[in-house]
Length: 66
Length: 269
Image (cartoon, rainbow over all chains, first blue to last red; front, side):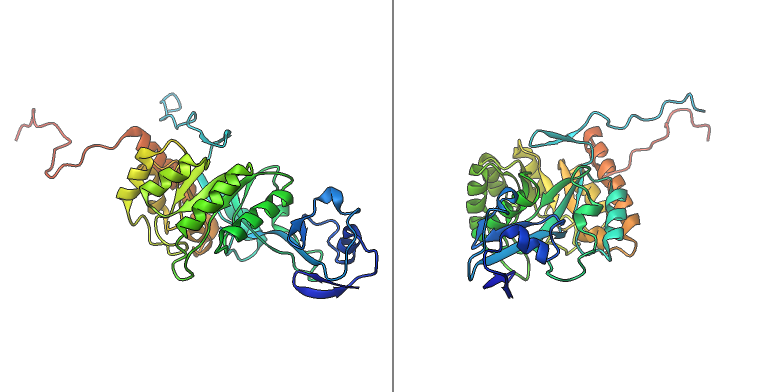
């Protein structure tokens, strides 16, 4: 099943949830925030949120800036 | 010699933003440094307690073990101030703030900037007002980057922004305090803290901002783009303190002609 992560197409298994996606991306231990189709998914809901085909996932973090 | 009293620095002169007490009046950005170690050392030397960060996409599949900005600037030690830099619409700025709040476990202090023009990075004031109104309603504590227009500064304060941050010159320009009279008018009318955000180039600029009565100064490039950023951070730390103390001390009036410092009476020549 294809989804989009930070604008890039990506294949994930059917039934994959957000926790599994972050593990696959090696981001499980990183401080980040995430929205799917422009809606924020709180950390507490990662395991319950199953990905759907063509979901647009944005994963953000803090970088240097003024 | 140790019996001589030293001048008392202003220990009891905290900066209060959204009910939180800070002892440093210098706020620093974390952009444009060579690496995270230089960022950490410069922030440390600046004495800043509030540091700004930008919110960007996570790099996917690149250097998973690479240290993260918030590892070197832990939120337990610093007040992290996420900004909306790069946002040209109210919608993008609001979206960025919501993501930042999620990223920082509900921490709701944000630096709102809605830019209007790529060349000057001047703020888009109508969009800034629109975004500020929504963010305040959503419970964010908004520190807002704005122009040096005293009426707009007042309006933003009345809308509930916790700090109003007029530019002194364009972001990253280092041109210094270009319109001290407007900054003074903004300070005179304000109840919320006023911080000069953008335009400072060197230590004297920061001191001037503070001498005008600003509550603080926020800067990034003036430190990061110095030849020795860590030393400049230390200079800015002192300049902000010196400017604050000079403001509180009250400067002497300017006079056109000289006034001798040594007595005129008692001369023998």
